[in-house]
Image (cartoon, rainbow, N blue to C red):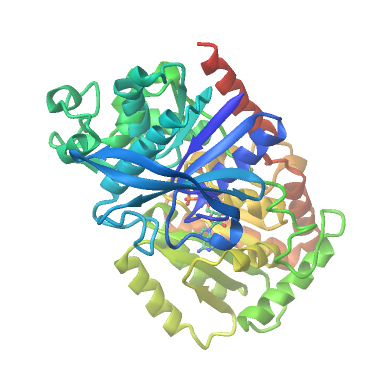
Length: 491
Ligand SMILES: Nc1ncnc2c1ncn2[C@@H]1O[C@H](COP(=O)(O)OP(=O)(O)O[C@H]2O[C@H](CO)[C@@H](O)[C@H](O)[C@H]2O)[C@@H](O)[C@H]1O
């Protein structure tokens, strides 16, 4: 089979969060199964060029009709750890991808609508006819729309689209100017509730909704979140649309790339280990302390790694920091703030705790440090408000770092409470789970975790090993995607 992934991120070259990991890890898995996979990405000025091998100009004259005129683009091509990637570079005064950031501009919907159209144009003029186009999140929601409404007539009618939603919170709400710019036009047609009109904002079109309506299949990234999306409010207004399209909606659990995330070979950690010699993990704890100037004391390290965003339960992240310090633990936070308010709050906390020898706040994106924290910490706390899948608990489990999570979304599918999970035998349990979205609930789980570390170290070690024995690689999930692609291709 021939699959083309179109996305706004692919690790390690473009990574703001979990989307990048999934595009990379899934593509690697597809390749391992001997299918052909290619990835189309924007060519951002700030991406990690050092992770691309053999970057060269592969297509010089891509002209994309846009806003009544045409934008000239170059398409570069190179290999990211063996994966063939195409990078689209538009030459226009809009400077869509030369902004020193991946997201967060006022015209993001225009930037990614343009990228979507350019990706289709590239496939069209180069004669590439994959069996499956796999699109991700709102940034590429217009691809199935334009494929069906425009490009199908240009020899692309055999392509099928799989659309994966990693985060319902960001949907890409735009005005009719996007219709005009892309050439879709016909406002009356697209501003229908059956098509792109936003379910709650009558003046906006919703790019993610377009992806849902027009794709051949839609999935989110865990079975439990697929259920939540239909029966609770976490689909942020798209529940009705999912209901209408329920026959083509499912949940497929994410995996993680077991070569990138492997405590036995990880190039960013000083001491390698496996479940069998987990005692070596403690040396990474020491290395982490040394790196972050924490004192050497008989205490566990609790960590948080992630975007600092409403989604991640920042109030409870903040509370878990202070609670851990009170309960004789150290705390390490690696977080990229997503807004000014959250940023100010955590910067002020960082200054306040600057001299504290038991905690460190790193407010930045730092891939290398993330690896050392996964290896050196004893527990990872994930108190999310909602979590479509969550990768940090999967990585934590792989590194013997016990997850303490709120029971939502994919966290429900992957973490099983040591004391209370009734569906798993004690030897199959792997972490701590709380459900209520409040401090008391968080404390009850964190206290059990920290207490186990201090008073029952053998049991704690056993729990770490049980977590490490889980297989959350792409082995199972990759197979599910291949089955899905196969099913769509034959339709
Ligand atoms: N400051 C930082 N420095 C270094 N590394 C950092 C970092 N902040 C985050 N990371 C890394 O980025 C990834 C984040 O994974 P998450 O599952 O939390 O993704 P996110 O919420 O962004 O994405 C969405 O998509 C993913 C993928 O589908 C879903 O799992 C998730 O639920 C959904 O919200 C991990 O690899 C983590 O180590």
